[in-house]
Length: 209
View 1 (cartoon, one colour):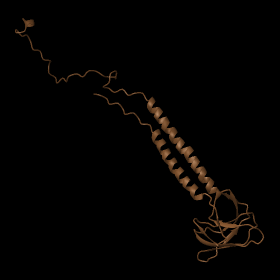
View 2: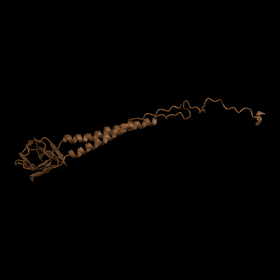
View 3: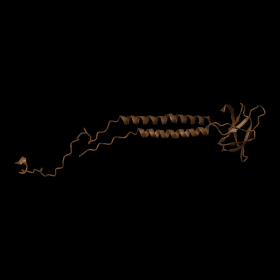
View 4: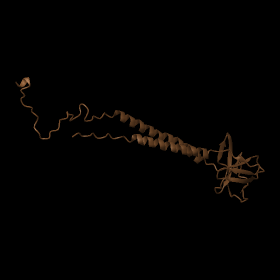
């Protein structure tokens, strides 16, 4: 009876490596999209009194630090938008120009058209408005992209390389039909219980005369 050899165990490291690569690409793509969404954009001047926001949140900026002039905002339906004043400590630099936050909407407001006016007879500041900008969200998106590439894609490459090295170092399997295999003997004819055939003496053959 010929014993069949056990099939060699397949390493799971390549599968883990491929899974890490897929997860890394998906996370990097997600955080890259978040970078585009949370990237700072130049605010719109409010000289005309009306601005259009493409994202939620309303933030009012000034070109120079001010003490928080009285500003008012209304939505497209003429409803007042409650504003929360800021002391101007937060600064955003966009395209080489610095803007100082002077007020924000007290609650998140949806994207749309808004009428904004600021009264300032003491300074020469110009005012602009734009959607809510979060420095933390922007930085987290950048860090998420970097760490997704370094951690998951790096681990995926490492697991794949280790799996290939182990596969190449695995000794060849010797099967029973190959030379040198244990128990490799020439096949014997079947014996059904009959005595071996003996033709007996034959006078016609020279060796039996």
